Length: 182
Length: 139
Image 1: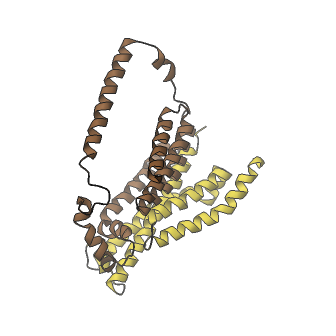
Image 2 (image 1 turned 90 degrees about the horizontal axis):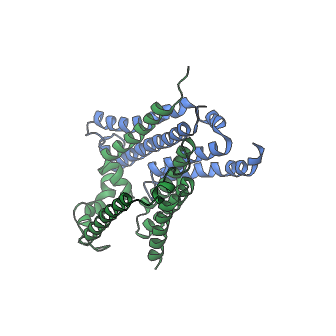
Image 3 (image 1 turned 135 degrees about the horizontal axis):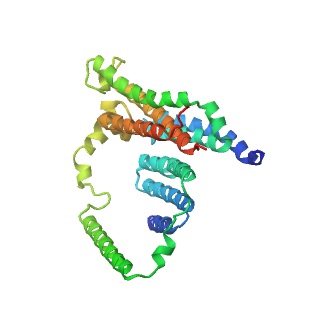
């Protein structure tokens, strides 16, 4: 029941963010979207993901988008009046776009039909290494939370790479945006 | 700027608790949900809240450009450095159990703790840097 409610709220937020003309409002709505998504992750027992979604998706991303908006323009300029002018080329383009989007949506739905049921113990994701993580990770890494054990120990190289990517992002921002002295 | 007195008072009261919570999340990542990444983001967010309430100038007094620049790389260096220490101790890169810190379980736990702190430092500093750089105008 609550899952259905969350899903409806998510779709409503996504639609509102797309349809909103004012980018500031769209950013705030996306923040709400992330917060609802965090609740959904908690419902799926993925608390670590929920934590990241709440702090990064709902928190930091919103603030960084607002900072970026403060440097650029707030409105979605030049979209409204041009689209409303009725021309047959525009109709043709809309029709093609609609077909492409409907086809992609159909393919995506077709793709989900092959997915295992939620919580299915025979699902590929639960078959191979998951058992070892659950049974052995405390003995092998000395860490109780096996999400942390996977991230920091079994997949330690990946996490080092991720940290380097974040570091590189800061370097890029400094190189592009920092005011040079003199 | 005196009209922001409510925002300023509330953020002044909240920021210590946010930072304490961030440290808790970093330290608690081995037992429950959380870890270096989430804790670092929360730590960075507390500084960003301070800057939003008190302005860029005041924020730069607390976290100077040099501090955040240095901390950006310190975190990655801690992470990669622990990997190198594992090499020096005779194991593979980032093989924490090779560290000479008592039992293998303890060595691995401490190694993971170390890299979580590294991740937290880099993530917090990067968030602060990106916010400072994008919100300061050139005019």
